[in-house]
Image 1 (cartoon, rainbow, N blue to C red):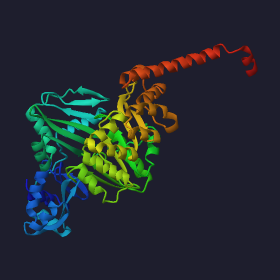
Image 2 (cartoon, rainbow, N blue to C red; image 1 turned 90 degrees about the vertical axis):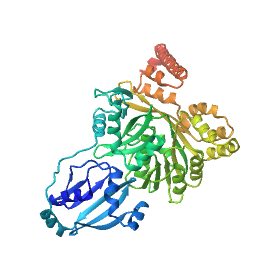
Image 3 (cartoon, one colour; image 1 turned 180 degrees about the vertical axis):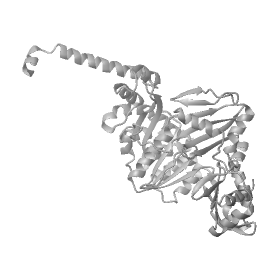
Image 4 (cartoon, one colour; image 1 turned 120 degrees about the vertical axis):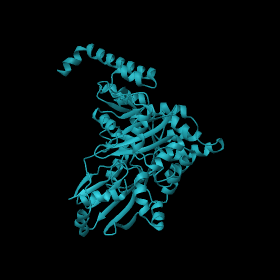
Amino acid sequence: MTIDDCLKVLMEKGGSDLHLRVGRPPIMRIDGNPIMMDFPPLTQGALETLIVPMLTDNQKLILRNRKAVDFTYDFQGTIQLRCSLFYQEGMLGAVMKMAPECMAAGKASLGKAAVTGKTEPNLNFFLRELIKRGGSDLHLKAGRPPLFRIRGDLLPTEFPVVGRKDMEDLLLPILNGVQRDRLEKERELDFSYLIEGLGRFRGNYFYQMDKLGGVFRFIPIKIATLDDLGLPEVLKEILSREQGLILVTGPTGSGKSTTLAAMVDYLNNRTDKHIVTIEDPIEFIHEDKKCVINQREVGNDTRSFSEALRHALRQDPDIILVGEMRDPETIHTALTASETGHIVLSTLHTTYAKQSISRIIDAFDPSQQNHIRIRTAISLIATISQKLIKKSDGSGRTAAMEIMLNTPTVKKLIIEEKLDHLDKTIEDSAKLYKMQTFNQHLFEFVKTGILTKEDALSTSYNPNDLRIMFQTQSMGEKLEDLKKTHRPAWIKENKS
């Protein structure tokens, strides 16, 4: 396929525009309606092969710097098209518009070419099927059929086993040239993938025993609100702060990205701020509402979290979201941002508040740790540690959370290296500061019927303490019943 092949079809059919995007076949616009051509979906490499030969050396240099290029293309020496090349979400795109006076001449002078309906990568079938069945993740492993994660359980499907060669044919076509090179070099790849009208997917490709495999996580187009997710009201109070560090932590697959997206959406609807997000890859897409939001993807829009975060401080941000604090440089810059009038939202793969604080401090050399400990104690607003649990009625999953606010007592414990006292402080501050331990949240889920006692105990990190909470509640209820049963007669008479 060449660019002239696409233009012949466009003119024979009386089209006006040709649109070229990675992951889709060429699209022509006829009478205002977009129609896909009968060509394979474009990879980044294929699109570059189509477009770049038309450019001058100066235009190539401009495009290499990720800037838009506008030019005119003479097709067969008689027909002119106005062309625009640009990058969107790290991917090259192009639009070619034919002048109205050229359409009739173009149609008369060209032969016929076939145009059919929509075609798309085979991988899309499995992703669409995943969503139809209410799943969250697609797992692809050579030698096994595709697997869907549905309500937390990873289940094999009825589809045929995917062989090694089939796996490559399934996974590789949706990658552009840069992504293929990175996968070949690093043997793993994180990226995002969009199916229009359905949603985005966070993809991860990797090799195991020299065989390619992949996992896709569904990212809905519609961002759930804090209320939709049933998250504690104290999160809204946390977001009202003007500066500091907010950490959302938990193991992989615990819903951290969903919680962060809901928090950004809450701010976007209520504040006039500039929000910069740095993600790997971009998952939820935020539209500007009251806020201006710029989303940058590591690998496509910037080289690393630390480099993007360092430059973000020069972009007049009010709020910075860092997808993950992976290294000392990123942590150091995040602390600096939180100390200089910014809200910083970030994640860690940790389970508890005390583990999160330790992870930050232990990332540095011993000679630096005391300084980092003090900076963390001063900058921290809150840690929100979460874990996804299945509801007892089987209707889905919800997030159980430990929430620690940086009160004067918490700050003192961090500075004095008494992190083992944090759990007790969180538990004792439930009423005054609206903090909560995991067990307190699980206890509340049992009271409201979301979980049974058995399910709560099985998911608790500290089931013995939770069991004591249930026993204490039971003893209190029995004591109250005894009081009612043995109430003196004169009290009843007074009541009547």
